[in-house]
Image (cartoon, rainbow over all chains, first blue to last red; front, top):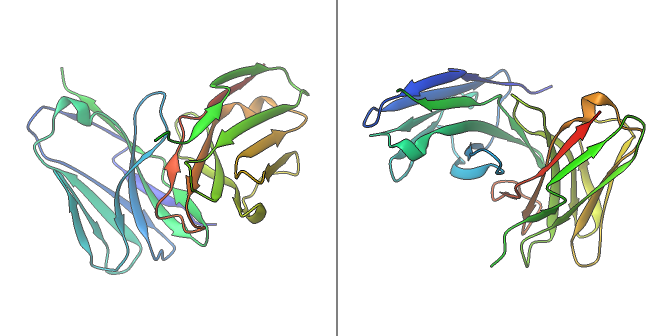
Length: 109
Length: 113
């Protein structure tokens, strides 16, 4: 079946730093999505990508749909403390989403 | 406007028991999907219902079943609970069967002892 590999598994950020994470798949997806999940909450949609090569921004977040349609990355610029949480990539397969295992963002103390 | 609401928020059951989880979609949304999220993993698709009909089923055993009511709310039932069924069960709604505009609830945390 479809599997998404997210990296890194976890990372520490310092306020103000830029953050980058990516997602790869052995399967082609026609839509890539990025979600953020806070403790005790469901995932919240950050960015949706519909076309290979597409680059989309949402505030400090920028995501790209890979040309091969098998990968995507998410960048967060000038991170702030509320950026901590778990970030998931997801690919659309028919009427379901296939999720990666997530990237955990923590604050460096 | 209220988002997707799920009940109960937490549940503790023992092996072999049965459980029913409930979901109310955002007003006007006709599609409800269910996902299982095991600790440390991403959500995994269980079912999708649209206009009261099952539109998709994930790789879950027949112990898992669901239905959608005329008011578009939904129930997920799990029979003969196993320890491995312990997870966060997420409900998501959308206006159409398309998944690019899925809105998730906060989930029901099920613990099977």
